[in-house]
Image 1: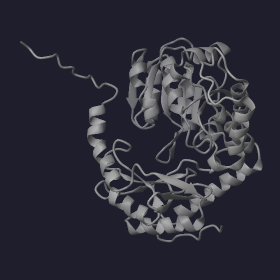
Image 2 (image 1 turned 90 degrees about the vertical axis):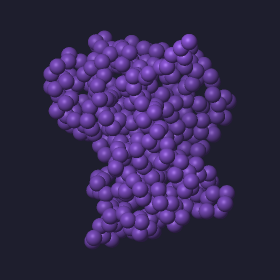
Image 3 (image 1 turned 90 degrees about the horizontal axis):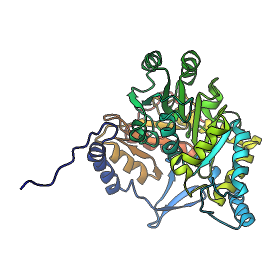
Length: 417
């Protein structure tokens, strides 16, 4: 009698055994050192645990601190009172409240695009990418899909579903030569990448736009980390840099980060109404009974109005001042760019201990390690926000230097508060 048949996974597009087997020990170590699973309340910019430990959170993506802006909070409350329902749970293709259309119209005007809302950027990508694979976003041709090796997991996790519809490959990080060679080989090519990534870098948007112009390359960007924090009216890095804002470019962005609210937006240009309806009806969870709830819609409308005022420019400049102050003291590969994330390099064996000492000193920064980053490139991820004080940044830099961060030998004076 033979035993039960054993399943051998192909692991062509994902490998949980590898990721969990290597990464989980780091997460366990993070928890044991109090650097994961922290529960704390926010009081006037300071986090406080139940045990009384206070710290400044330097690992928060609300780069402009709009998530606590009184106008944004009031917008959520106003919408709830106006419409009297939190979550009208029915597919929007059947019934929707007018507030959702109002938000999409506002976002569309703000970003000069056709805007489709979603509950998260992950949901948007999970729904859109398989439609790109099947040619239903595009001209009907199944394309070669090139996923950037470093693209966020919210996009990479769609590989198996896309592979059921078309051919996919993974390219080295922003390998323009590889992309161009594939454009010469295939009639239709999509490149999937971050416009601004979670470790402090930008896509070569202008170079990709040249390939779009020369070969008809189509590009899918997740620009979540730069929208609101960058560009006029907060349009983000891609939409303020790329000349290819047409039907060959799709941008997805969360509204949770610098925008300061909840949900996500898909930004399209030049696609026919039929394509928009296909997305609404067939884009996976985008089509299910989970549109943005009313509070998120109201908060989004309020944030969009702030984006239309000079206050946004003030907040953006304040953020850049904080970034420059950090760069004047700590040396990273990201030093000098406008991105609010800095990866302070650390050894794999010491990054957890370094993070613990920084936390005990009153600051939280995220230790990052494989599979978040490539093996051997661990570090402490620091995120600047407009609401942080200069003194908080100076004090953080001092403790980072103590735990081994590379410093700038001749630090420039910081901006005044």
